[in-house]
Amino acid sequence: MKVLVTGGGGFLGQAICRQLRERGDEVISYNRSRYDELDAIGVEQVQADLAALEPLVEASRGVDAIIHVGAKAGAWGSFRDYFEPNVRGTANVIAACRMNGIGKLVYTSSPSVTHRSTRPVVGGNEQNVPYGEGFKAWYPATKRIAEEDVLAANDATLATVALRPRLIWGVGDNQLLPRLVERAKSGRLRLVGDGLNRIDTTYIDNAADAHVLALDALAPGARCAGKAYFISNGEPKSASEIINSLLRAAGAPTVDKTLGFRAAYWIGAVLEGAWRVLPLKGEPPMTRFLAEQLSTTHFYDISAARRDFGYRPTVSILEGLKRLGEWSSTASAARG
View (tube, rainbow, N blue to C red):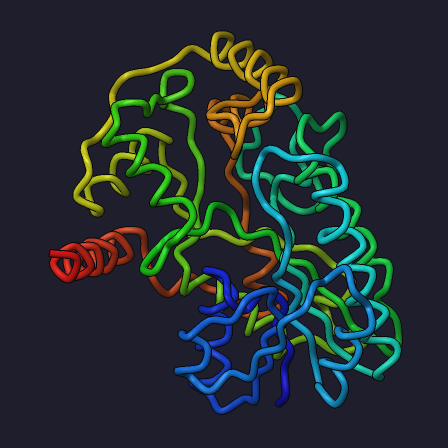
């Protein structure tokens, strides 16, 4: 099979590319930058922007399927910053599929498309957890629009599916873990609320597995076509346990200090205002959306993914932490 992976240079994208290459698929990665890691495993790379339709159509000519991972993540930025890659970029991916007669599209969505303030989700599934409203960040708002567009595109010629992996982590993590470690080492890390809210997470290999399994099962009229699925390890734990386990695996100090939700929420509101008015770089260390996400119980039922395309987490949290610890120790030794 010949597969185009958008955002193939990212943490999840690289894991998907590796799995596809290991089983012999031909893979093209569509990125804004070039990655030596993809060259090393024989992935062809096209450097262009998702918001540009013409190069995307050209890059996807002759492929059998697209796995659309590329997006702008985060909790801060302008509407345009998120709309262009997340909404327009997804519309371009759908258009490229139509123009090139591509029959399969797997879309990487997010559970945050269902976020509703501090309303907890306890074992929720795709039928009883509706889309969110009143988003306080452009990321979930634009991901919801994109997911709906992908699912609406499902028909007799293009089979589509959306996956919602929850908090991906593991070996090679260049997103979540570095931020946690940096804040823990500087003494700036806090648990929002009491840290007892339960959340689920997804080990990187399991997240990649889900995409490849969905790709293989997908076809017009397939059970998974036109649907969205929650993806995780299926092992919900308290936020404090997850965060401190990751920190220990990375050799960083653990955290026990807390910041109440109300304080975190209003600090986030003040910082958002400061970042809008002043020429400050990067993202605010706290936002209202982050305060809600970090303090609220969110874990999901993944049985639909198991039933419809055979997804079963193969790497447990315990095994994942072991692998992460070994990788972190090796990386630390290499740095001297």
